[in-house]
Each structure stands twice: as structure tokens, then as C-alpha cells.
Image (cartoon, rainbow over all chains, first blue to last red; front, side, top):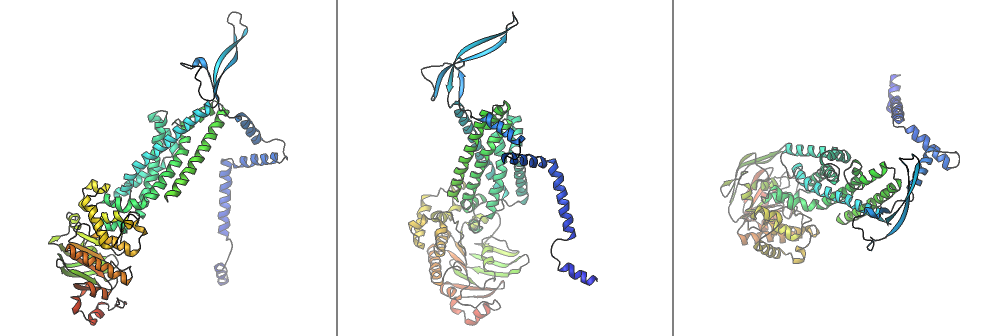
Length: 333
Length: 249
């Protein structure tokens, strides 16, 4: 009898009792965590929305809210209206591009202190309407975001190159130094950009400086690791040739390694620029400059027309930069 | 020029690669180290310019023992030609040749690649000698064929008019006709600059044709040391015994 059993288990296929136990355990675990992250609610509400869309249910909370937000976003905000008397040295002969003057009446109601009755006063003011004024402001913000990304990438590249030299085997003999520098790079990488920006805002205050630094430090950890790994994978033949003529480590890097890894170095750096731009739109949320800061402000004031324009600008510029960097990388590799 | 006394080397788990090697090569000699693959030829050459250090024994170059302190200075007088050429593939051919002149430059100029006019003239002349034209000098090294790449390697090795040229199987990856041309280039250039040459080969016929002296290496020991004319077929038989390789050109 034990013999037949041994034969059975030896040639058995399919799931065993132990496998079923594991599967059961995983299902229980997923059910438990799913409840914690409200997967059940997501399922219920999106199901309801699907039914409503198909005309099988009367109302759906999700669709209502989406509808409301959509309506409050459209039309997107493009113009800026400024009362003329608030503009210094206003010259009606020289209006900015795409703008005109309008006279607007604003009615305000207040309590008359003597009679204690409400009094309505109408005030006529001349305002300057810049039809694409807000768009222009946002494009400037987007440019600032790009500038943050470019500088962060530049600083990261400059900082990470010497660190990579200290972290790569061909250029650094001492294992302890390599280990130490790699550790530092890992720590830099481990701090998410948003958290880094949050801390930098404490140091530098609101504005782009915090953003640039936060992105630069994270980028240093990222580039340093990849630069070092590339250098270690570079072919060793040219390095031996340089060593054989008595070249030092720096010359070894310059003539045997750098020419071989340069295309990858550039590709990583362009990728970092691409990624830094996306992150630079985000870190504005914690006050570290760029278009994200504008978004946060408008969102907190429920100005959804403005929010819609900002989101549109972000999406379009991220797509454009991605297109550009993909093209650049293709040309280099 | 070169003196090896009781030099031995072993690598972890590989047994003895070289065992008590005594060898002295006088100035201006074209010395071929002949032997089957795995005989220790490469190791011997790499020991001479300090790419690896011996376990026992002493190596002297012009009476000086190679140490960490004088290694760079001594290596500057040694040119090396490698089996796999070891050019930097993405550098231009001209830059690869000029790499040979780097040790003579001050540090910052070397880093920036600011070579003296004389160096550039010499690179141009050497390129002509080894048969590279100006169009090829402007191309990336990786675009050249194997034979052309080895021509670049030779030009690079002779940039600083070295006292000693180490050629580690310089023609192992080239066809026979090309091998003769390349070895001829090394010999002619060496006689022009008065350089001593230590060249490892595994082809008996090529060794016979080019060497002033043949040193036979097998199993990490010198089993043969003679002028090419006085080497008999039975010497060659002994040299390749137990290697499973037939001693053909």
C-alpha cells in the first residue's frame, strides 16, 4: 500500500492539498486588504455607473459628480480681466495683444449704517480683458516648470558623474569606497521627489529652489547608479590597453570607458529630464514652484475653469516633451 | 633589456601557469614566445609590463625591478599590441593612435586630448607606415576590419618610440596572408626605432620566419630556447606534446 501511494505522488499532476491551502490563504488575504482599500466600493460604484450609462439604472453617484465637475470646468479659463485702475501706468493707446477694454457694472449690496437698511450701489469700472491672458500666464508657469526640470537634471548629471566614478569597479579599486558611495546613491534614490520637495520647502521656503534641489538629489541617486553600472559593463579590452601604457584611472575613464558609454549616459539623462518635468508639475503641490503651485492654489479655491486649463497645459506639454525626448534618444542610440 | 629570474605565477584554482621562468632578452632582439594555447604565453607578457604581479621571482627591465612606484614610468617605454586589438570602438582611428602618446602629456592636456603638433605629425606618419589613409583616420575604430584594427594597434604601440614592444598573439585572429604583413610591420617598425620585441605566437612557421630567437613555452616552463635556424622538427614535437594541438602554421 505505501508503495502504490509513493508511486501515485511521484507521477501526480494538478494541484495538491497544500496548493489549495495557499490559494485559500491568498484569497482571504486579498479579501481583507481589498476591504481596507475600499475595492468593494470601487466595484459597486463603477458597476452602478455602468448600469446607468446603459440605461438600466436611474442614477449613479459617480456619474453625477463627474457631470458636475465637467460642467464646472467647461468652458476652460483662457482670459484675464483686470480693472484698469489697478494697472500702474496704464496706457489705453497701447493695449497688449488680443485684448480690449470693457466697461463693466458691478452691483454690491451693503447695510447702510444710519438706516440699517440694505443699499444697492452700482459701480461702473473700466476693465482690461486679455482674451488669452490666463493661457499666457500658464505658459510662463509651464516654462518655469521646464526650467526647474532642466536645472535639476543638469545638477544631477554633474553631481552623479564623480559619484559614479567612485562607485564603479574599473575606476575605483577600494571596495569599501564603492560600497559607501553606492549606499549614498541608494539613500538619495530612496527619498521620493515629493517628500524631498516637502523637506526642501522647509529649508528654502516656497519657490523653485526647493523643487530644483529635491529633483536634483533624487536624480543624482538615479543617474549615479546607472552611470556606474554602465561603466562596469563597458568592454575591458580598451581599458587593458590604457593600463598597459601606464595611464591613470582618469585617463582610463576618458579614453577607454567614456566613449563607449556616452550614448547610454545621454539616454539616461534625457529620460531623467523627461521624468523630472513630470515630477516638476507635481512638486508644485507642496509649494516647490512651477505649474503645480498654480494648480494647487486654484483647486483650493474651487476655480475649476482654471484647473481645467492647467490640467490641459500639463498634459499637452508632457506629451510634447515625451515626443521630443523619445526622438532625441532614438537618434543617439 | 629584460631579465626574468625564477618567475612563477599561479591563479586560483588553475594550478601553476608559469613555473620558475629564467629568461633574458637583449636589446634589439625580436624574441618570439612560441607554444600551444594555455602554455602561459599571455601571462608571461602581462607579467613583463606589470599588468599582473608574479608570485615569486623578480622581473627587471633595464636593471629596474617593477614596483608600484616606478610602474607608470617604465610602462611609458613599453608599447603593447594586443590579440583582440583593444581599440576603443567608438573613438576615431586617429584618436586611438594618439592614445599611445598620452603617457607623455601633462595630466590636464592628456585629459582634454590636447596633443602636441609633433605627436600629431608622428601619428600621421605612423598611420602611413602601417597603411592607413586619411579617410580611415577619421572613421570610428569599430568600422575597420580586424586587420586594419591591428594596424591601428601597431601605430598606437609605436607612438612613443618604445624601448620594448610586447605583442600578445598579435595575429591570432587574422588570416595567414595578413598575419605575415602585420608581423612584418611590427618587425620593420621595431628595427627602425631600435625596439626590443617580445611577441607571442602559436604558429611555428610564422615564428621561424620572423624571430631572431624562439622561446618555447609548454605547461608553464621554458622547454626550448634557440635561434630559428637551429630548431628541429623534434624540438617542435616536444614543444607541442600533450597539448592536443598540431604544430601547423
